[in-house]
Every structure is written in C-alpha cells, then in structure tokens.
Length: 396
Image 1: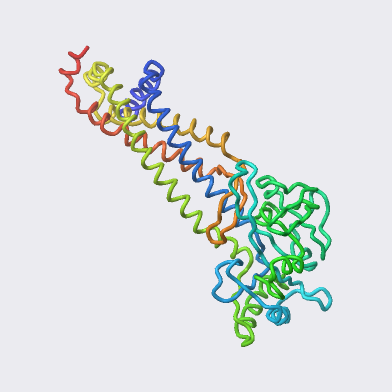
Image 2: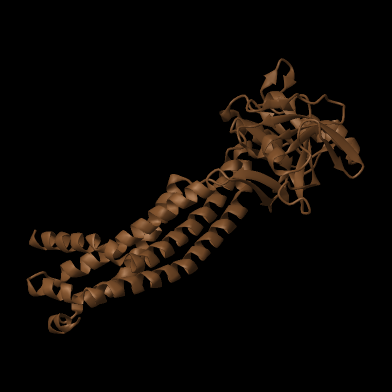
C-alpha cells in the first residue's frame, strides 16, 4: 500500500508540472497526434470501402456466374443458360414467373467531378423489368425510373456525386452511345449506388453482345433454399456455373483492396511511430534532467525507485493519451463521412464510398498512442530510477 501511495504521489506531481514543460511536452504530443491522424485516416479508407461492399447484397439472393469467374466482369452466360437456370428449384416465384434476372455489366469512361481530365471506369449495368422487384432496398430519390426499350438511364446517388453529367436531365456520352439521365436511385449505401442502370436489351445492342449476359441474380424461397439451388445447378450437365450468396460475393470483392490499404496504413504508422517515439524519448529525458534534484530529493526522503520508474512511465503515457485523443478527434472531424471513389482491382471499376472513422479505429489509434508513450518513456524512466542520489542532488 505504501508503494502505491508513493507512486500516485509522484505521478500527481509529474502530471501537475506538465504545463510548466509545455514546449518540450508539446513536441511529443504533436508527434503522437500526427501519427494517430495518419493511422486512423488511412485505415478509415479500408473501413469505408469494406462497409460499402459488405453492405451490398442479401443472403436471400444468389448470384450465378460462369464457373471459374471471380467477378461479373470475367463471367458470361448465354440466353440458353439463363433459361435453364430459371428452372432451378429454390427460386421464389411470383405466380409462374421466377424472381430471377439476367444482367450484364460494361465499363465506360467518365471524368471525375474533382479531376475532369482523369477519366474513371464507371460500371453500367443492364437490367430487366424483373430486376427491380428483386431488390427491396432500391428506391428512386430523384426523377423517375427509365423506360425499358429506350436510351434512358438512372444513376446511383454515389455515382452522381463523383462523376460528371449524371444529374437528371444530363446526357451520358460513351463512344457513339448517348443516354439520357432521367433518375437518381439509392440502394442502402451499397456498391450499386456507384453504377448506372439501363435496359439490358438496349445495352446488348449498343455493345453488340447478342443474347448474352454476365450473371443472373435470383431471389431464394428462403435462406435454407440456397443449398438445393446450388446443388441442382452445379450438377446439371447443361451448365458450367458457380453460385454464391450475393452478400458473400460482394464481401469477397473488398478483400484485396482492403488488405492492401491496411498494409500501407500499418506500414506508414510504424515508420512515423518511430519518429514519434524518439520525440517522446527526448521529451522525457529532458523532463528527467530538469527534475533530477527533485527526483533525488524524493528518493532521499524514502520514495523507492519503483515508484519513480512507474511515475515517469505513466507521465509519458499521459502525453501519449493526450496526443492520441487529439489525433483521434482530428481524424474523426476531418475524414469521417468524406465521400470519395477508388478503383476496385478485382472488377477494374470505380467504387464510391465514404471514409468511416469507427470506434474500433479510434480505440486502435489510442492504443497505439499509449504504446508509443510507453516505449518513449521506458529508457528515461530507467535512468531516473538509477540516478545516483548524491550526483543528482549536486545538479543545478
């Protein structure tokens, strides 16, 4: 108990004198805060991208693609394949009509609003009338739904905010194709909001695709119907297809880019963290040097070396806590909800999303700040604990 009282007494004294050493303490605080801002902001990119992809799709829907295809862009289904797939058990039906839609996706170049001279790959999805009842999350928020069999299109809310000429009344020009934007839609913040939707037959004609598609989306009778649906299709000799739940497909599409961003984020944070740790070491060495006589006096009065060591470490961690809190707050205010888009390397198309500074990321940033404070205070704390009392008492 005496050791604990001594430790808290010395710690309280150290913390109260931090404002007196504000210039040197500020170096450590600013360095740690900067590391946390970069660390949290970079990882918020991965969190936002993963959230946009993982919030897409539903476990009640299944996506059918050509066997071996890892994305819709590398898949292909013929009209005959589509007719056979729609006969599979497990598909929910509206009367005699299966709730399944064959769709195709092409990529067009559109300039970004923020950089008009840098075209980006924007996905255009060809859908049929049956595609809309499949997606309960779909809603028109501006304008109206396009008319099938025409050159009208609707654009996702996120695409409208990132690319030019996607407001209602604009015309999208791609090669010799001209499509009139008549509506803006939402899809619960999913990746579909980065797409442009058009009649599938119109898109097939514009790109000479004949009666071919990229994928088929089917609503299942229930989540438990998935196995029967998959087994029937994979065992059918007429077909060569792979089946995935829609939400699992989109979640898998985020893995490569998310892993890359996280690797970069941890790498940058590690390099910057080294500099911040050296800043904390210099700060705490300065604190120990300027208070050498004070520390020696406390030890001469009976305070043990353990109390001195723990108190110096704790002071360094307090600086880390302050820096981490400032850095986390700055990252949240500056980046949370920031809208952007990036290339999904698995589909070679743009995905619009918002940075997400989550509580988990803030906790990770704060933990990293405390770790930097702990490492930065370790050697100065050992020096303070080992400082000879007679030598320290003679220091000015």
